[in-house]
Image (cartoon, rainbow over all chains, first blue to last red; front, side, top):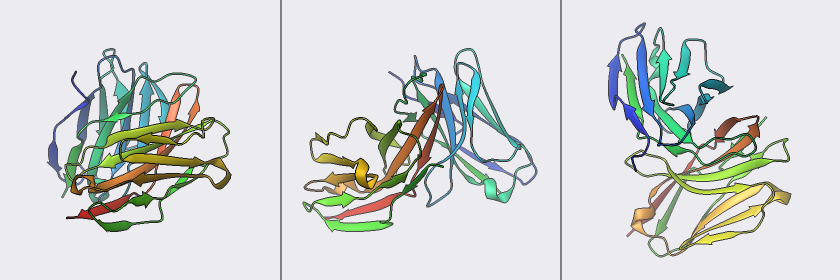
Length: 115
Length: 116
């Protein structure tokens, strides 16, 4: 079975531009989460979606937005890019659920460089 | 607020040595979940274990073992007879559950280097 896939693998953008990152979860998984991992640090939670609804939001500015589609794939959008947005963006999927927290399976990430 | 501390930034051991990675967490919830992930040089996070707050039984999986102690809010990870392939950054993570929402809080990670 295919794991979590993300595109693109690498991306170079200029300050002020906009970027869209894409993620396809493992088949059957309804929950998708996005994380930002700056070099040398642990992943920081950005968003979680379950059944196309936002279920969690981390401490990130409104320049960051996301959505989940009917096929459970997801997009992360970042507007007005800053140098500090340079990071590895990770997507994770899980079965999701109301009464328990299940392990998340991570994709390979998108390496974003803002110049 | 949730918080995960991994006090060991980097550890170096020689192959076949045992090594323990420490994880201390903070949460106000009585129901929570703890995880360990491995991030090898390739960059992709690999799930190792999930434990809920009601299950304090220690677990062993091959050379890996986990010691969960609620009394000290710790969830430590031991690798027995380490191998070079164990070299990676290891993250401990905590998540509470709130009506379908789940917010994973990761620790800063411990970089393990296993030398031949």
